[in-house]
Length: 314
Ligand code: XIL
Image (cartoon, rainbow, N blue to C red):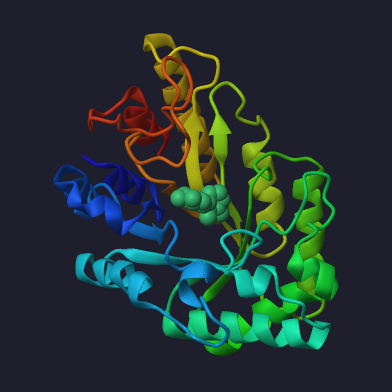
């Protein structure tokens, strides 16, 4: 058994996880991560982001990302590149930069090109979190300087860097239908109309137990109907004001099963990535006794009911 084996047996899906190499000193963690029966795909949780890959203008530092890429190669897993353009974890020279529109267009283009070119042959989250919950574009250095033109600029640079890369737009709160998901569907349509390369939408899925949208599957079908694929890219399901006792964990199991089976039911949902797999290293803070605990393995690497929920979802 194992999560990735269950995923593969079900259809063509992969089951993967995000990771930070600082976690690898923990030998139990490493042995689970490395096991291809559990994980067939890896996303770098941090080290391929802008602050780490271009800390100074035009100075590219891929050492940290290469540690992840080499691990992926050695273990025969797939890599998901994350990410090219995002408002967070930017170096100061970008956030505090005073760029004209042509200057920032060049900066975005160079960053996406160099990053995707260095990690060729991958899937890339080219654009991350470009929308607000109401469906308008997020105000950040990119939008404020370039309007939404930074999106085609980034996607086209990524395509030139690697004609074979799968190029995604990734976001949260687009798991169910609603204003934000609709805006993203319209964005994809408009990009396609303009001939801008776009291959997929990444549905982050940082969810809360008891609040999983009921329209997950319908929403994915609507994205796929635009002629793209979808992936669940950052799944975790936190407990919130519910108890980490048997009841809370059983509801968490059911919610994991719901999400996985929605992806499994959609022909072009290509796989699922957990945003790390143990409560020990999750980015979601755990506040005992009843908040957090979002992962299928607990902080002592005991498999929670959620683990079985994932397997049953496939
Ligand atoms: C998170 C990392 O897991 C944290 O370690 C870091 O401090 C902040 O970023 N959406 C994303 C991811 O697209 O890149 C974020 O990762 C989680 C939310």
